[in-house]
Length: 190
Image (cartoon, one colour):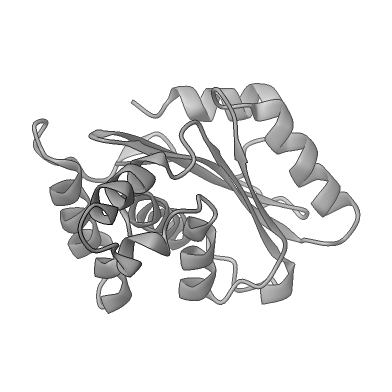
C-alpha cells in the first residue's frame, strides 16, 4: 500500500484478498465493525479512503460539499457472481445489498459523514479524462469543494485501488489536477 509514492505497508505476496483486506483494516483503521459485513469491493475502496484521508483530511470542508467520483472495469460483478451462487440454495441478503458498484461510495460516505454528490462509472479501463471532466464540473459550479476520485476494482483475486483527493482550493503540496497527472498516479499503483 502506497501513499504519495511512499510504501506504507506491504503484505506477503501470496496473500489472499480477504487476508490482505483484514490485515490492512487492522493496520490502518481501528474499530469499525461494519467493515466485516462489506463485500470485497467496498472493503477495498473503504480501506483506500481510510489511508488517503489520514494524510489528506477534509475537515475544512462541509460534509455536503465533499463529492466522490469512482470508477472500475467490473462494476460489482465479483459480488454478483457470489450472490448468484447463493440463489441455488438460499439467497443471501447480506450479499444482495452489495450487488451495485456504488455501494462502496455509500460505505465511505457513512464512515466519514460525506453527503455530497457522487457517481460511479464503469469503463473498460481508467478514464482520467472522464473523471477529470466530471470532477471539474462539481468544483467549478460550487457543488463541491473537495472530491475523492479514483479507481477501485475487484474481480476474484485481482484487485487494485487508486484514490486521490482534489480540492477547489489546492493545498501547497498538492499535485496538479490534470489528466496527465492522474494517469501518473494511476500508473504508480504497482
